[in-house]
Amino acid sequence: MSRATSPTTTLIGVLVVVFLLQVLFSVFGVPVGFAVAWPLTHEPWTLLTSVLAHGGPLHLATNAFGLFVLGLVLERRTEPWRFYLFFLAVGAVAGAAEVTVTELLGDSVSVLGASGAIFGLFGYLLAGNRLTDAVATRITISPRVAIVVVLGVALAITWLTRGRRVALIAHFTGLVLGLLAGRTHLLRSHGRATGAGETDRRRL
Image 1 (cartoon, rainbow, N blue to C red):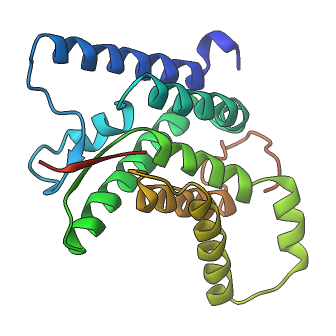
Image 2 (image 1 turned 30 degrees about the horizontal axis):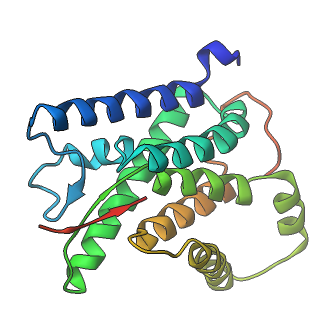
């Protein structure tokens, strides 16, 4: 896959364009919502825009860097449309999980940022590589134990990202989805050889 058609660099370009639109709308006072909040049915398009929008230049830069590092590796194992769909779907589900769970816990938040999706990419690469496949073929465990292992790994990694206004539920959700997708090689292209294997706004 040539760099010119790289879905990773294309997505980074989209993130930058959306951020510039956020700044432009803010300057001119255009009331366009990008962040997803409860109820999800109020502005359903924010399930997608929230994945692409960011809370500031540093927020954008850190997520763009993570996407660049992980995306360039994963995009070689799949097709562009699968990559885009996985990124947006995982990011949307992660954001929805964050606002839904916090609402059930009696809090109200809005969420924006791509790191739920980026954690999905990380989880996929962690679970779907050759080394993980080689180890998995030598160990026989029950499905229940496997689920516990996946959740335990996700919890441990998520805990390392804790911080003020960090959407930990979204990070955890994206990571679990990525781990499960990696173990099933969900993004594997047919016929292509792959390696075996007023609210508080939170930022992903």
